[in-house]
Image: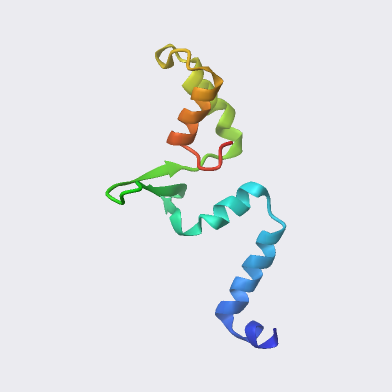
Length: 101
């Protein structure tokens, strides 16, 4: 273990790994998707690629505090129709947040 801590790159990774071990389920999920995460204008997105690999899209990672407002916006507006809970949740997942459950 001493040799690993002498290497600045490994030392940094060890610190990150130690910090993430006690983190929330949502943080661990984001950590697992590290290679797909992108920052654009200080906003966090998750990059999704189609199965065939021909196209990609960025999915906004929502702060938990905004989830009720987004659900309301997608469910309560007249143009949304009455999708019901299941379809509203599916719509939120597809548009905004890879962690929304």
